[in-house]
Image (spheres, helix red, strand yellow):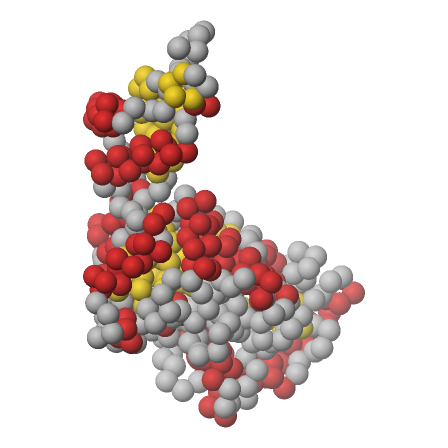
Length: 456
């Protein structure tokens, strides 16, 4: 493993490695308790390394799932994606403090297992062998064959949940002690967009590290890849999880079952995120599918930042002012979302994107005082009275904030059914004009005042 340093990681990280199709992703899902990695009989489905925060028996750690090591020599491959997969394995092993090496008891030790074992001996990290697919006790003794690999062995069955606790308890032992930083809840950022908009290149540039495979082949990113990272130290420490999603295209155009599942995972990633970075290719502009992505972000009440990527290719053809104006016209319902022009290729404005995400996250936690909130709403009503519906006019008695993330505001009115969609939009605009809340979703709730009458 060229260039790999033989040093212990000071982070609580466990990496899962092995040749293709031995059950690495299934084990990753079992340990994390979530269906994060795509499990499919097609070899090589996991290309990038997947990361997730995990807790086992009260012990927090970061778990990494890697693509199958399928090459005897990573340099011998002419396939850029396959070579990228091998690079991801190398980086995961550098990050890890402990390694789970997954094998298949039904096939015994094969030459590629021995190749992987050689790589692991070279990296010098603690390793435990998960001898998978020992689905019943009659197969347990067959794990002894794997003693030749030179590491402690545990017969397990991911499918039947056999032996996994003993395996994970052993893998946890070499991890460094838990620190306060390990307990900080990270801000989850989903990076979404159409295929080939530059999502993976953006993440690699942001982290200054090849964390995800970049290729000009659309659809390279199949899983939604969770990448933990942090900025600052001490009281200034901030933790994030970047989620690089598969490009969202029309479901009817998805080529196979894996791609269709990738699209579904991307949508789930938006649902799980705190803030969504919606990436647009500057050379294409917003397409119909971008609008569908934006609708998904709004439906899930997520904070949002728009990145116009590949600006180096558009600069000189148009200006940011002209482009931004046209973009606002195309995506009018996202007029409250900050727009940044970036280039993952040159690094232009990349660091400012996290500042924008932090700003949106802060806006989502805004607490509005009841007095000021009611004053703004009263002024809005005085300027534009609610329309008459069902022969009666809506009356707003008072307003209060009842939640954050998203900012949730409750209106107590005479009859909630009299609130038109247009008037809700008007109130939303007035609230944004008064309080900013840039990039933050606002949820308006309308409730009847608790009196035994309609308030007519």
